Amino acid sequence: MLNSLSKNKRLPGTSDSAHPCLSRLSTAVLMLSGAAFSLPVAAAFSDTIAPFVATSYSYDDNLFRLPDNSPGFDGARSDTSRQVQAGFLVNRPIGRQLLTGQMKWSRVSFDHFNQLDYNGKDYLGDLEWHIANHLEGHLGASYAQTLTPFNDLRTTDRNLRVVRREYANGTWRFHPRWRVRGGFTRERYTYDSIAQRYADRSENATELGMDYLAPSDSRIGLQLRHLKGSFPNRTNLNFAGIEQGYEQDEIKANIYWRFSGVTQLQLLGGWVKRKNQVFSGRDSSGANGRAIMYWAPLGKVRFTGSLWHEFAAVENSLITSSLNNGASLAAAWDISAKVRMDAQVRREKRDFSAASGLVLPGDISDSTRTASLGVTYAPRPNIQLGISAFRDARSGAPIINTGSYHAKGISFNASAQF
Image (tube, rainbow, N blue to C red; front, side, top):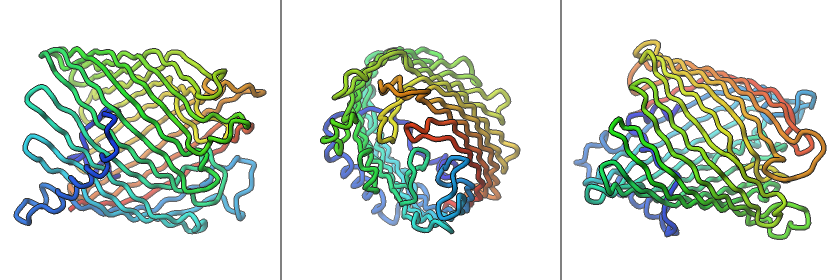
């Protein structure tokens, strides 16, 4: 919902890269955002800051993603929730630089499981910088506090997840057809529930690449990436066979191919090696990649298809990562100037044995299938009303607490930007 609100003031795309000197990055970005909010009254308010409000009412028939044959907590499996949001979008040029951001606060209340009620927070700040004619990049930070999904967690306790991200990256176009780029990203995940603090983790990623820029706006390049992850609350769990950290090295082709004005392909794929800090027998390597195809054959109808085969982190007490194979297809249809329909189907299989190296009986994997459909009506450019429905199903592996379930739900929402 907020994505469509901010389509004219959204943050520019940033790569997952930056430079290691990020200890004061969050403070610097927030100070820049504060400067934007304290602009003189003479500045055009609507050109710099855009306040917004939003509300939604949702129903979920299996809130905790319980197995189909499992009784509900307190005799209930379903619940309805209400969400109220308020915030600001920021878009402020500073000479050749551009400061963009978002500050959003939300209150979520549940009808039956009111112990889950929480206040959400979402802060974003990005500075797009330019030096001379050949150097440019992004410097930014984000903070998000939301309720942790129940897909891999069996509890009725409120468990808030905080994700902090800082990044800095830059590119040098040393030739009209060539550029080099690099950067650093740091992400930290922390959980409110004592029972899940074992999953607290931080990831530092360093990236270096070179691209050839074709006259057709296509590009082809090579990318090197090093990822280091650690779990600060697992230092005394070696005896239990629980991993404490990992490193991942990647070499991938980075391709954006513009076949035409209606068809584009983006591909990031190559070879990845993942090493564990303690249990080297669980190390793994192989091909990893993601491909995304954009196709807009009729202008008003747009399709986005994705395929991926890549390692990913898992929020589980036994498993820290998985090898995921998935596909998705999304479609958007501008029925009229005021009405848009969105639909998506997605399927993903997580193979835990391939990434973790654990030897367990049976099939150590799960498969998730989701589908969603929504309609948005905009009676005015700054007002949107919407309805959406989803269906979610998983065939899981109970031995590692990723059981099978079915869930479906519906949501009504409204938003306004000033």
